[in-house]
Length: 532
Image (cartoon, rainbow, N blue to C red; front, side, top):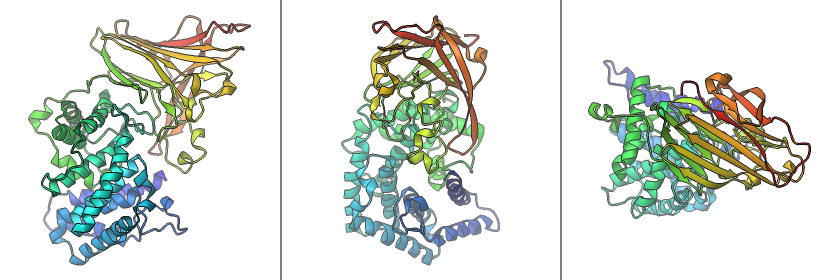
């Protein structure tokens, strides 16, 4: 699936690049653009073959993410180049989108399962249909019907975020789902001259959701990449600038400026995932001035503490002025794009990755099937969570963590989680607590796991890192604990690239010969990087 997705992305990227190429003598760019559009219109269907029930893999009336994005692309092409495109092509676009997609949707919206789900599909598919309908001139009555349905369905999408605004699908899908919702609203407001808006009466809720994006930015262009999120794939800078401007959110504008500066420093990769026309046009239109870019700084947002979602992100500075960024994950193991990761955490110091999340695995049939939790990136053995009597965490809503305590001081942060229910009964434990303490005055992070059991029960504290050098990481066992082992992990990330990580395991120095049900077994470690 990853290879095929890359091929589709390459085609969209090539079309986008030709669309944004400066005019040159001889008109070579225009001929290349026309050839790319002709190739797009010649495709028998735009839906992803895996989403089509017909054995042929061709479903012209199937509306999935890919079909919806292609419909919107047609609308974008007409908006940009309509007067210069062959009239027969315009007719083909209107036929395929308005007659082949919008009409069946209006006739039987209940047939499209994504309309009744709070996932990113809801927002992306509606954006594709409505955005294309606005650009391609859908007849008035049909357009109003489409807008009414979209408002109804999109409310379910918005209700899928926590009350504080967290996206359980992770930051990558916050950008994809919520980002497309915001872009659809911009299209609707521009089309209607501000008379219609998806934000009307909901600015407070939508502002909370918007703040989630900038709160997940880390220094060095990295992200809080829980769930199926890419570490190195930040939200679109243009999206954050739009949110800052439309909702008067200075933190979004600051995040957008930071991302634009990073983009300017590394250059634009036209072969990157989702580097399409929709991206490039907004990237250019929202580009800040040189004066604004000069004010850009590294992310330094307020704490994000969401007990409902079980998510904590804090930033603190030590005495040397270095920024410690800590993210802790509670929640449960039946979340969208779920990983069995209750109690996991990541830690960066001035952009140096000390405790990591593997993030999104390579997307294959196994990733979204019954073998999902055999994959390293999604099972608990690929996360910095305890191992109890050799048992990993179980999947399911009942497998959960509770945030018991959060003390967020100016120089110290203490987080305590109850992980008892995250592990199956076969683990033989009675209670499991995890305490994570960040002390910027001492420049260290300590992690301690406490286990209560009625019978002798093994406990290992686990840490996932990108480095195999204990001195570079500053790893130390807590008193009574010892390093039990270190393993090299190899896995394929979302781009299909093979990467290496390391799993460190600590256990008690001398397991007790018997078990006192009232006394916990304590295992833990400290991260104190050298020079801090």
